[in-house]
Length: 234
Image 1 (spheres, rainbow, N blue to C red):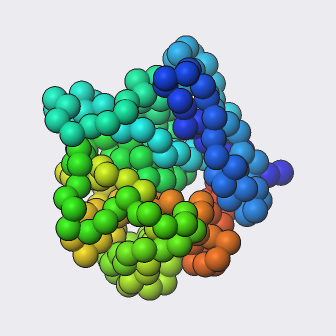
Image 2 (cartoon, rainbow, N blue to C red; image 1 turned 180 degrees about the vertical axis):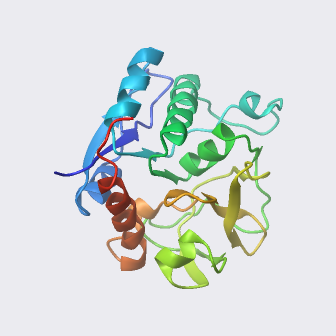
Image 3 (tube, helix red, strand yellow; image 1 turned 90 degrees about the vertical axis):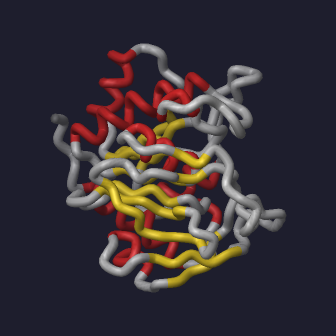
């Protein structure tokens, strides 16, 4: 039996669409998971049913997170998608309570942090280019991975180059979490929940990197492997 991995849709707020890039789906399929796309549901009861039925949760990328969720006024935010925010806040907290595995990618890492009580930088500095103008599968800057972290265990290296498509990033790490990777300009590139086998947020779009670098594929492999342990409905 394969684990079911719920993936939130990206969303297109101007047109009311729910969609998801193929790379998220193929990343999960390639390592033995069954992707289940989750649209911007409004019913809390339906969101609870999803949380019960999935074995793991992947928070996708997308628009900026509304700073109202971490107690700030908007200063440098761009496009917002309130429906995606509300869905992901609700679902993330449910999954955390159920102690199921979570992988957050780019905005997904940011939302994971916010949902658990952290804050964001509404716009990172221009010291290092974090919104690359290069192919999506091309790594453009280096990150430092902290020894002793889950991410270090998965990558096995202190330094690795990643792609980068964001202008926001984690600022204050949520309680119960720790920073596990930094860019050279000090921008937080990964966070993870302490004392949990797999709750990880990574800023890089690793769904575009794993085919060329098996170290990134190992993140998906380990995520789905952990999800396989979680078949029971709590």
